[in-house]
Image (cartoon, rainbow, N blue to C red):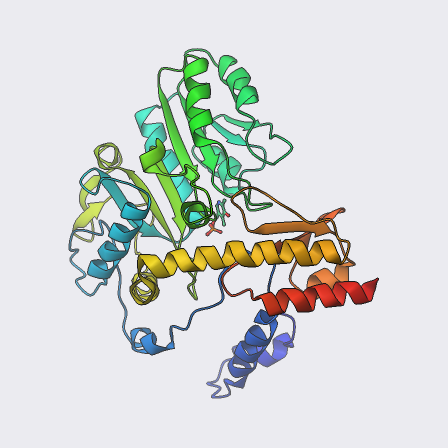
Length: 381
Ligand SMILES: *Cc1c(COP(=O)(O)O)cnc(C)c1O
């Protein structure tokens, strides 16, 4: 956001009833949203019916399934959302612990922390195209981190993984598998990673699926792509604000209940068990997500994903017609194409490097928007 002179927003000594800049800001945010087709965030939601929640302080501190001394919470809604995600991820509800996080980064951090408590000597492996939260959390957790080479399609090279595993004989391995890379939507080969661990003779391992972006897209795509607990992952991270959509970032983490005991401090989180990363936890995101999920149902979520795949295929055709050499990873909804000038990318909120720009098809992206973008590209010549 660039439109405000800082002097206009300065909070001074005296009360100032002029809050007009906020109305201008939200108008600007909504206007820009019209051409936001470059980030994995669904803008198609409306939580204004939940405005009453902005006039009460809720706090879901501690274990989502236990009451804390601060009883004004939304934990029953959090639990309903967790049950939905646990089923989606193919988990056994009696063996899975989960909570709503501040987003994919916290979800990944929590899962890898629990994994490291199980295997204190573990090395963390993730593809070179994994999310930047993985090297960051490795540093935070003081774990050695290996960035494994990717194949030309952007997925983790499982042959290279076998080689890297062999360089750390006797040590446990935590492998972070990416289900939908943030850069190009590539879905790592989860069964292939399991086979690589076996081939390298690793006896102690943990496979974490970072499905923050692509879990829902993999579940409801044209072909079944293994991505979850039912397919051999030990833990899963997912986002709430990406495919589903939410005005604030949020996520879900699922880990084996039996392992959470290693990090749990009983009764210390305002009278609840402390088995999450943060102290106070958001009570708003659970109701916002519950509202969307309840409205949609599992079938509606599947429709969102299918719409993304359809629109991505449409975009691929349109971009080919205007000569931009589009490509798309299997199971993904990101379409990479020959990069237009920087001001065009900025106008359409497109991330780019020297060669490519990325169109990220989320549920709010319509075929009309794609056609408009393609027409503008054609005008560029
Ligand atoms: C977005 C994303 C994350 C991080 O999520 P935040 O909510 O931004 O912390 C992690 N992994 C992948 C693959 C992502 O796309």
